[in-house]
Length: 343
Image 1 (tube, rainbow, N blue to C red):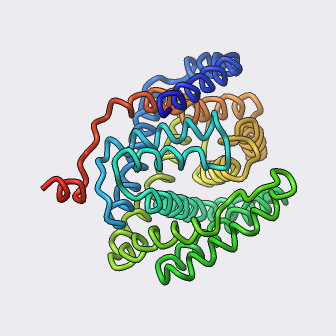
Image 2 (cartoon, rainbow, N blue to C red; image 1 turned 90 degrees about the vertical axis):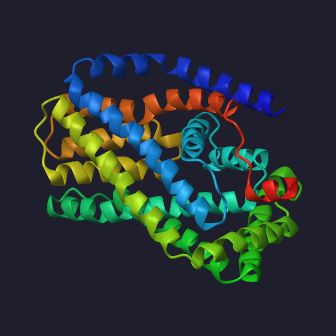
């Protein structure tokens, strides 16, 4: 069954790529016009970004009492990003990859799901830190729009929700379970008229909460396990800002720190706050508009947007297809519980 699902996802990915083949060809032609060693350095940093994401998950896993190799987690991150695009479901598809690998390796799926929420929270906090600077730049240049304000408010709202839930889990499994059960009831009421059945089980929500809370409480007792992922979140955004800077340099477009941070903030914001998977179509338009508002010509803005998205979205997506297939060949590392049982 697992192999059938993976084959189906890979087929969906192939169809998705074929459907956007013209866009990919345009990006490839655009990249050929840039200074190759700037673009090559950007690709190296993108690869290091994936490893950084894997290292962040590894730090969170360890804080929750789970041991996993950096290489395996980096593969899972890459595969999850790919699945989120070809099978969009609000990020649930990507988390499903982590949960599937957790079950295959015989460790807690609930803790892994909680680790995914923690990773998103740290990632949002890292973006908010950069976004604050970007908003200041836009205010000083009179470029701040109501759309950006609303998207920023939505991001902060998501971060606050995740912070509330994670804090509950770190304090009390009972309170965490009650909160998840309440969310389940709300979702069931919304979906009830359409599917005519209970979509989420409140009993399973409590069971999930107790399992996840054990890992979160363990993590709370180790401050380093919280600080380290925060550091990785900062380096994550710094790497992406550097990639955008290198794209500017590759096409000899004059830049300033304010322009880079403001445009990066808008582009990344709409990757998250977008109705399309990974912001396809939305990010391209928003980033091009942001660049032109910073007095960059429309032609240069289009080149920078296509190249930046090619390096940070399309190439990682193609690598994600390979990563999803490669996960099947990665050996399963015995967990301490397994080793103890074998003894």
